[in-house]
Length: 175
Ligand code: IMP
Ligand code: MG
Image 1: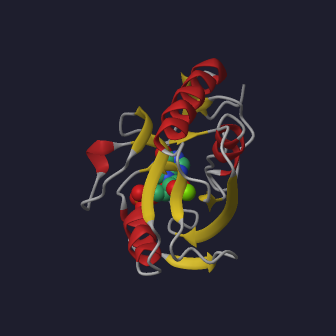
Image 2: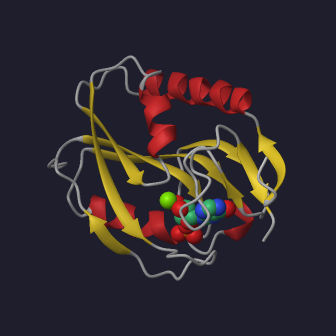
């Protein structure tokens, strides 16, 4: 194991259990919807979205957005820039944003405000991880996998300076 890794917070098994549970809730809530669009927030949500979508037995389309918030620092600047916008028109569609982790909430706040201005039929958010103690804005997250303490974590798609995304588990790293 990498010497920067302090402790495993969530094992691969625990994550996969939770992903199935979230997929079950989503499938139930959207069973009447035949045009669901999942929007993954790159790059962190990549692995979560890949696992989650394969557990949801509903017709769907997917798209991705890339935004910059952290750069290489571990603190949110509050400044969000769109690096890659959607390919799909979302007006009148049912939209579920898939995010890896909600920290201050500023990134998702910006994203949901931005997407809401495109007038989707509905807009909800699913995040694997949430650090509620860090929230700096009013933000409603509809599906949350795990609430975690205020520690810097990596793995399962989530990086520190672009590294550790390939870890199959979620770990706390030494800051
Ligand atoms: P927010 O705008 O502060 O909510 O930041 C959200 C984004 O910051 C997430 O999508 C992650 O990319 C990143 N982030 C927040 N906390 C962590 C962490 O503990 N490890 C790695 N990235 C994080
Ligand atoms: Mg992210």
